[in-house]
Picture 1 (tube, one colour):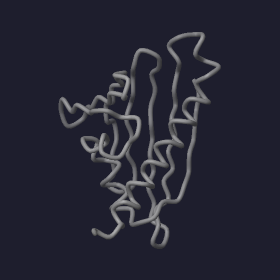
Picture 2: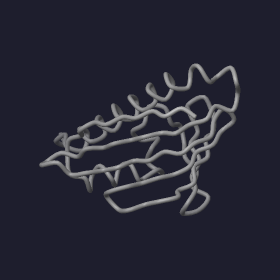
Picture 3: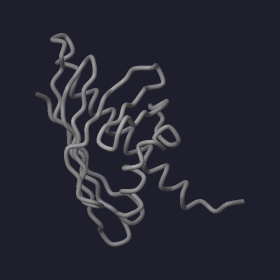
Picture 4: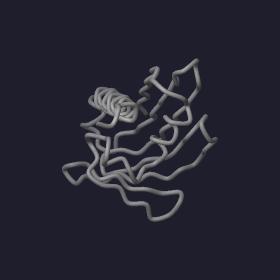
Amino acid sequence: MTTSHLKTVLPGPVQTVWAIVRDVQRYPDWRSDVERVETPDARTFREYTRGGYVTNFTIIGEEACRRWEFTMDNDNMTGRWVGAFRQRGAATVVDFTEYVTAKKFWMRPFVKWYLKRQQAQFAADLRAALQAQKAPIS
């Protein structure tokens, strides 16, 4: 199993950050790597990358504005994602950890690099979405 961790401070109140992260239907609006999302029910969702690759998610834990946890599975890996959210002054500290097992032996050396890249992109896209919410309407 490979573990990857990202902790960063984002602008805005925890309620705003939480609302954006939890609204999976709107991921295609702000995430650069997601083309579409399907939500078969309240506990599961599917992300489709711009290239059509699908990952299935099942929510296994949630504490509003504090913690969100789900399992994830696709053709290449299986694992779990844990997101912790905490207010710090006018900002929000997010702490995202992924625990992933590669399904294909040859992919194992690349998993940590891939996860780090994905987490950095998610955080950058989330930061941009938060900044866009603050932008004045012309």
